[in-house]
Amino acid sequence: MVIERGRHVGVSPVCGDRRFFFTEFRQQFFIKTGNPLTARFMFKLLKVVIIFIIGVYLISTLFMKSQIIEDTNFGTIHQQDVNTVEIEKVCVDSDSKTRSQTCYSVVDILHQDSPHSVHRAVFINGFESEYDTVVQLIPPPGRNSVDSDTRMWRVNHTHLSTQYVAAMLTQIFAVSALRLSEEKDSDSSLLVIGLGGGNFDMFLHKKRPKISITVVEIEPIVIDLAKKWFGVEDDQKRKTIAMDGVEAIRIAEIEGTKYDAVVLDACDTTKSMPCPAKVFLLQKTLRSIKAVLKPMGVFVINVLMLEDRETNEELVEKSLLNQFPICMKMQMSEEANVVFSCLPYSIEQDSLPDSMELIKSRLKESAEKFGIDSALHYSDLMFID
Image (cartoon, rainbow, N blue to C red):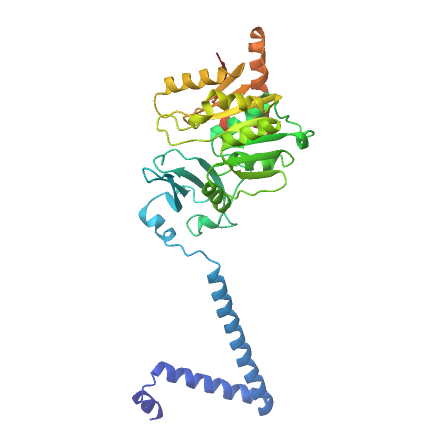
């Protein structure tokens, strides 16, 4: 009758059962303890401990929730069967007269057949198929892209994901502008024009931390994205400067600053040949670049030709050879990029074949040393004339 009355006033059978069980448990606890006062104290203490544990759990849950980036897209990746997810897009005014904008998109590239393999890239609007930078991400232990938010993954700065970056790096060592041995790294310095995601300079910095690296980037927003999403960091030996690359070269020339290598990976929005930006092919700019090189230095250029390849390649070669006595180029086997390298000194004509053999030997040695030999396996290096 008591239970039926409880139902009548709104107490559910389940709730009644729970109360009955709780009362029965307390009575049995008192009986087994023997001392009613001790039993009541221990029972109250048990309730306090349980309440404390529940409270700690709720507080920790709320705190951890505030540390997690809310993800409105990540959960739908596999449902939509896509392998590229945009994680941030930022636009800046590029022309006040036409009110046009340049937009930078950062994306994570998910390999559905290999959920542990994820890359991050950045590209400019209009060049969606031509990434400025591609880096490899490191998954948390025991996690993959199916059950983890890849935005929280760290960048692997000891891995190069693109052929042309591997080519730029190895050509510096192939011509001995930098030595494979590290004994003189403290006296070595590089000027890098164009940051992107920092793949080139951060890789070199991790491998050879004593080399001084100055990276110049004209767009402050690119620097912000590189630090936020690509793990780019400044320290005593590696620094990023927000400045026009041409202006940085001009200042270095005026101040008499010399570099073992100048690496140019700066692009514009020209459809036929976005890299390098056209201002860097002007004769006065190339003359200044040559002036800031040490006697045994090298100028390395990333060239990307999307249209009129033969015409553009001839234009680049002619522009470079007007200022530099000797230049080389390396065609990529899997990418449209061509990496040129120019020397401020001459090589005798009859010594060119032997010199090329020596350079190729050093190229292979440096690629093996940095663990990137597979990226350059089918690439071809040759002098241009």
